[in-house]
Amino acid sequence: MSAAGQLVTVYSLVYAVSPPVLMTMTGRAERRRLLVGSLLLFAAGNVIYGIGLSYGVTLAGRIIAAVALYGIGSYAFNPAQQHRLIGLSGPSAGIVLSLNASAIYLGSAGGAFLGGLVVKYGSAAMLGYFGGAWALMALALFGLNRLSGAGVRSGQPADG
Image 1: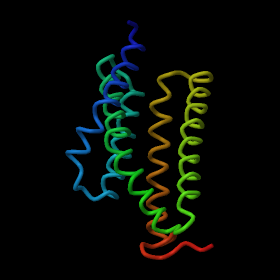
Image 2: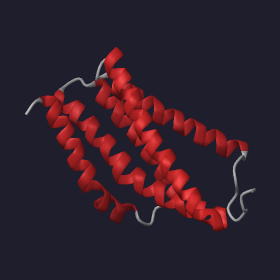
Image 3: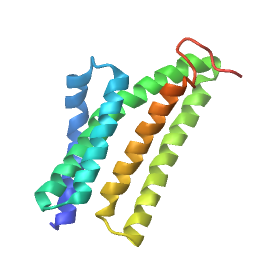
């Protein structure tokens, strides 16, 4: 198996194994801190992958990114987000959750498309920097939203 194939295989195995293990370890953690920590860890893993000083360093970056994204991030984010959407949307919950799922799938497809452009016009090593930059941008937007006080507060129904 090629080195690239090994990186994909290890990433996929970590993706498959880490969620149940990490759900058990982080089940009682506060979700906001878990999500922020996950995004920081994801950004770090991608930058380590991008630096790629050796095969071992590159592999470590991929493992860190997989653990952060699929082991922690998906568990911390999706159930909490869906619970909040259900609480805010009342009788329209089914439609709101469907739209939310569509946005997540479009985001995944858009990320794959942008990643393909990075590889086509740059290199595979640039993917680490690209992924890390997007994670840091998401954290910055999250922080700006928290500082501005914008958004719907818990317990307040959404307009419409």
